[in-house]
Image (cartoon, rainbow, N blue to C red; front, side):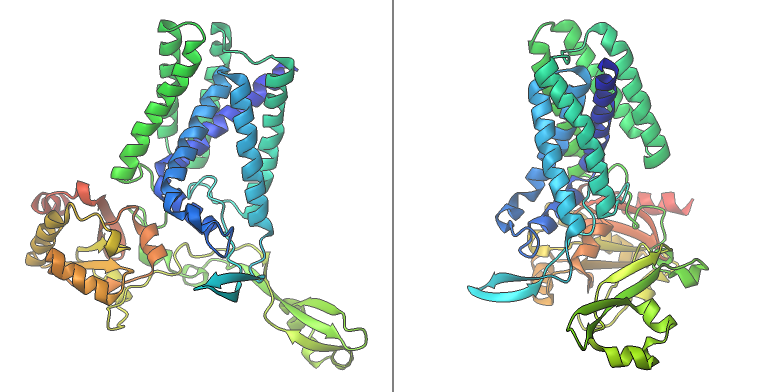
Length: 457
């Protein structure tokens, strides 16, 4: 039994640290996911939308601190209770995500008037951010497995009292095994070594506190120390950009290639079918027929089928029959405010061009706008194209450009796409021949001449 408890503590603690760190690396992206859940056509908790970022930061830090706490046996009952509450909530949330019907109709209030609209389903839970995309059912099954191990920890903490603050002997095998597990996860699944270094740091904080502050206070100060380390990391990634970018617009990736279809790349596309609904003429019962079967069996010309059934709907759910290649970028588009699509012009430009991404100009951080203006002028003077890109209206864009003396043209794009391209408002993206060469938060914008000299080498 003791061995099972140790195994459960190591698995749960290590996974919580990694999961929390991945989300903390991109807390802004995690907050966007929370906003999707809080939406009026999802969980209808719109009153939480203004606090999405704060909640995201809290959840990220809490996961890491709880992960460390279960590994070192700190405040075992409180840790087990909080972990149980967290996993029960996320298990329910992933179940809700997995069972959400995107065709369901719900009643919402719009300006005091009841309206019927289609339910919005969140297609990915965001458990591991963009690092490990999981389907809703995969996320749910993952949480069920995690719930099993957390239940063992919970009963061990509350009923057997077998979890206490680690002895030096327990540290010698719990911490190295956890670090080994996190190393394997980082190398094999994340392609990112930082979680190993981060774990070293928080383990070091714990061991230092334990050495110089023996006794019950060490448990609380371990949690405080870990939270401070997490807070510093969280602050850095929010002010600057995520340390690791798993999105299809990461530095070094080609946006143009990311938009190519399976046929363009000589790959096998997914095989999908649509659920057609037919009604039995005699008993009025509905029957579902997949579009693939409908076409292959030529039911549209089968006299016996036609006599027995009448069409109710050809617009049912889309079912994936066989997995295949799906382009990671499907909605990237740039157009002028006059409606001209210049996406290909930008992606096929073999020179260097720059995009200032400001998905929402009304809430943009304008502290560095003078530096951006100077950078844009230097780029234009050197013959490079510089565009502002926003999801704001043309009226808002015109007013903002005038107020901030932005002497470069603005383009329009989808807000969700712009949030995906760069986790900053504003941020600068450097591109050439459809490839992302570099990108910066506004506060990190380099000197233009130094940048071009470096790029020309």
